[in-house]
Image (cartoon, rainbow, N blue to C red; front, side, top):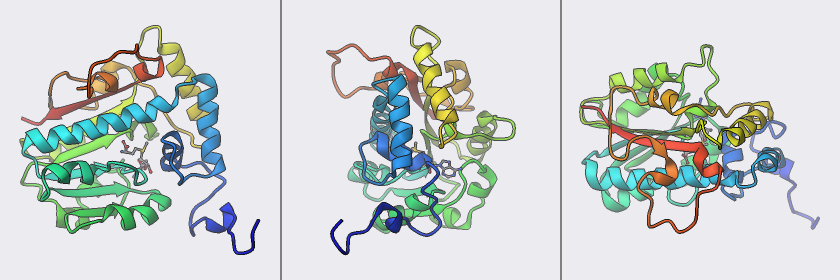
Length: 278
Ligand code: SAM
């Protein structure tokens, strides 16, 4: 190693445990990012052993997030976004997609990962309409009463609440992510939107691969990643009217163009939807 070069452990920010995989860093590894450690890449490789196309869990999710944001910005008229579980900054973050279409739209990101915090503050707070808040997204009352969030978002005006690629990592006392979403949706004014994506057990010939990936995620140093059924995912969009085409695999939610290749198994294992609160 040349003198002056740093090892991975020397670069680890204070408060970060490199012996534990983090959801944000594992996701970054799935997306070919650089902000991950060996332990995170190990989770990725273990899932890949069970499902060679495992990376598509992340790329399909991210593609859906981008298309949903583009739709919301161009069609919904909503000017405020609450992005729960921002992830590490990557290409085409929510504020970039949304503010390209509606530059005045406000975007508040929330995450609780220290590495996301370090990078997020620097890279996501690019302008006066974009803010980053550190909080627990699985505690809706804390988020809804968070002073910083209230300072930036007006809860009397429609809000687009994004819960993308997050709820499958919720391991709560009752494992009831639907209760979390009911609390969030109840607090949103009429005309608000909810975007949600989640690992799917497709309950068909692709179920086996979903179960295998779940087994690896849950027993990995990251410790979470539940594949729920379509009916269970519908419960995560309570009190909203789904916009076309409803809750579907991400690949089928307004794809960018015609499909020439058949979908692989993994592409059947992540779903998303967008709904409007009447
Ligand atoms: N939403 C982004 C996307 O769809 O591309 C990132 C998804 S990433 C898989 C999940 C993110 O949720 C991670 O950045 C993780 O740190 C964050 N997260 C997980 N549990 C959280 C919690 N309890 N509070 C706040 N953020 C959390």
